[in-house]
Image 1 (tube, rainbow, N blue to C red):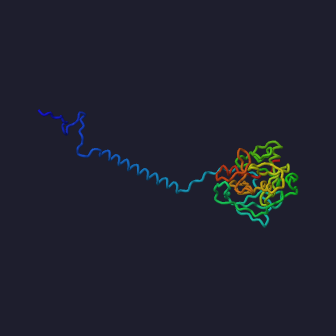
Image 2: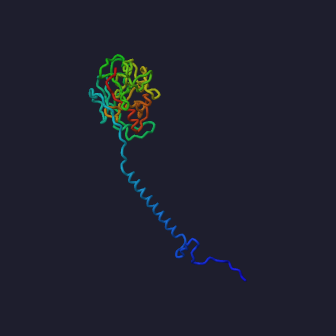
Image 3: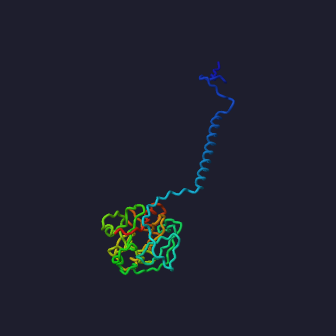
Length: 290
């Protein structure tokens, strides 16, 4: 007798009671689910791209500027600039020792610096005479030592973001310090004179007859040796600041580098387009502390 292999009965339920649906091809339900998931993914991606594009096309909101501190005495108004020197709008001018001063002109936007930091415009430079022989007083190379301490001549430089700290000669260096004693106040008071290298800019003399100059980009107090390098190192041009009543001071021989404090040390630093730099490089000229 021929043996036959037993076969499952057709169209009969399995042991669990389920019977396969033979009316459609296997896997159709999975295909529909996969297709629906793919369509949902595409719709989500298109929506996300549209939202991001709208967000980038809208003008980005500017970061809120730190509120400037109380102006205090601020910059003072003195004699008008000479007819040969014209100031551009936005100029901030420091006073010299009672005589006619030339304003250092600047646009409201800081310059493009040597280190390659980007800025939208470069401040215009005043056409003041260069090679000035010293201060506006009659004291020669030690111009700050013999002038009378009148409010128009002797000033202190106060930090904008640390309003309780001032430029202060500490040893041979200039730091941003809190000054309490009479001796400290004396070393935080300077005679603002015409720039040694450019009469349209400014130099700062001390009561000891020295000048503030940068060396290796660090601000320090040294005696004038009469050299052209010293005069340039000790000359700074006032530029517009975003803070009312404050100025930024740009080196005459390193355009694009401004005096700023860092770890309370005064130094020349290349311009940076951010609020921290703007605050660190903004100073207010106030009545002398001494």
